[in-house]
Length: 78
Image (cartoon, rainbow, N blue to C red; front, top):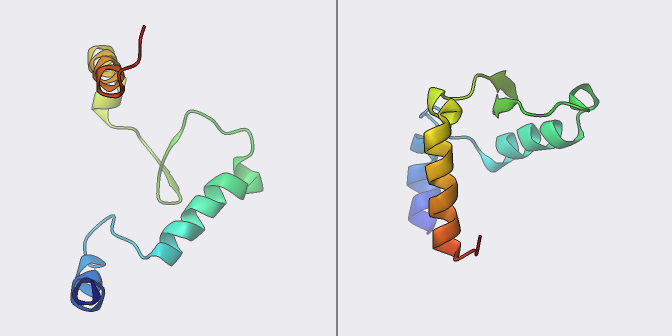
């Protein structure tokens, strides 16, 4: 584990969408507690910035398949 923290994490931070726990925590706290986001719903955020959701997220067939697969995996009865 020390190897990962000492050698891999510094390199990982050079990659997009890989952030420190501090940076991720700040972004999450802003999304949860930020007064400027009060009442905001149905939006997607990349870190602390509003972003467009993926094209796949609007595909109803994929959404239905994901839901049904998830139900089966956790064995929920309909």
